[in-house]
Image (cartoon, rainbow, N blue to C red; front, side, top):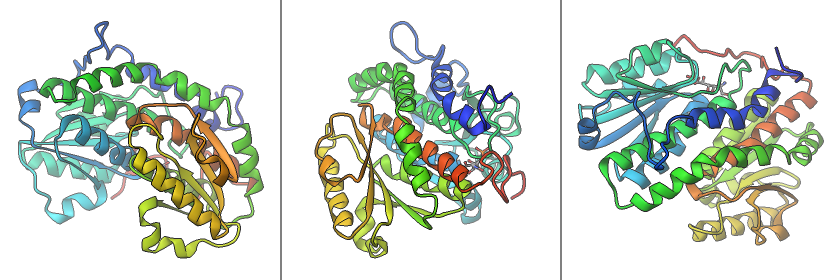
Length: 369
Ligand code: M6R
């Protein structure tokens, strides 16, 4: 049932191009517009929304953090993302003009379920993004957009994460489409790029051998840091989470701009630091800033592991290890940038002799608060 792979996690990583393609299937029509018929919230309600709140835990929370960038950019609706376990305990401001999106692979996470129940009690509309048909979270929501990743068995989420991102992008683009924003043209272009993104994920997967080799060579390290900016910041958080849960190592993700406000003090000789570099096109200011960050940490002895777009030559002199990812629109980069991190964590954990499918102390679905 592992389809020839040693672990479910390896199989699920390899299934990502298909999972992404399946999640898009039937949702983009021939004219390049989105068809989200299952989104049973009336367009009138969607047009009147004045806030989106995303609640989720763990990896799904990281998908939500990325979604915020897309939702605010394409729809101009303010979007908050909150850990589901914190949400209802702080008396959040909710009303019928708020769309609450609950993201959950299993659909059974108690923290997320309690957050959505709270939101519905306050009269907000709740949309579930979920991978498990008929599970509790979609049953208790007003509408559901299923991710079509197929069953995810390994405790560490991989293909579900990528499909959660796809579903979040679809919701953001659909809100933009329904409400008509000034980004109309950009939205059309992104829908096109999204429809071919599974090929890009496939390409990344084919180039992972050096990442595996690197991971094995770091098996005796104690700490790995992850840096990113913009949508690369949540990707860094996700990279760190994968390493914690699989390799049982100390790993932390930081927004690269925060380095100088404290974390740079952690940099020491030979400390591995993974950096997700934004595209040099588009928001090129951010690109240049992160290149300076890489220079700064390298000057202090860090071993830099740089994940950068094909053709980005500016990073080459400062990268001890360079991982190339395909060129994508800025907001879609997490779909390709997350993949090397999954492979890295899986291989490092295996090299340390850990059970990657069933890490210690963790359960696939967390049904207690
Ligand atoms: O089933 P859910 O998506 O609601 O689960 C949320 C988290 O428990 C989950 O993403 C967890 O963080 C994973 N083990 C991460 O790999």
